[in-house]
Length: 261
Image (cartoon, rainbow, N blue to C red; front, side, top):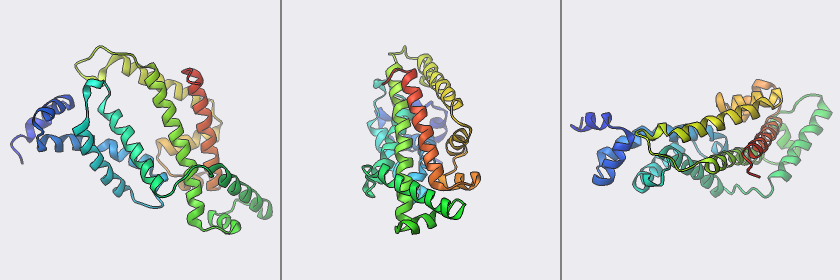
């Protein structure tokens, strides 16, 4: 064990950043990486529906750690942005960029989803029961892989859309703050996060019961769309459709509450 390890572990994150900017110590950088690794892991799991068809969670985490090490070098706390927020946005952007490199265009998302929705409705009409995803793909004459990518594109647009609205609301309502000893306890920032949480909770309470359940299972229980479909015993396209509808309602509610539109 390095003789400085104990000393570094007693230091706050802010103190570590101050010391690192002066010394560029590899040991301090490693300590910072360990402290913020949870952000990388959390977002990698939350957004796994977006990339699960072409890569693994561990690969995304590895990419995130590389990005984290670069961000530690670039971070400027004088801009009054919490490093967690800075890292979170970059991590989400990283995952989106990786998805885009897999030819995840968004121009035909609505057209493709309508095609899947119509095919699912046709099969229900013919058989009287919700079809398996592979049956829908077969009915449409497309591969199951292509079918899954179409579903994931809708999920991607929904998740990112809500994230962007929440970030816009936070940025619009953030005022210059009097620095506190602990930046995690900035009074206005703490109040704003609570206000956003309350508005989001109010918006969720106005959703239909099934929409509430889907939001809870996806964002709290961290189930993917396929798992939620199994829990609710409906088709995966239907879950994706309900999820997207719920996100649109939440987005509209937040925009109206914070006068963003």
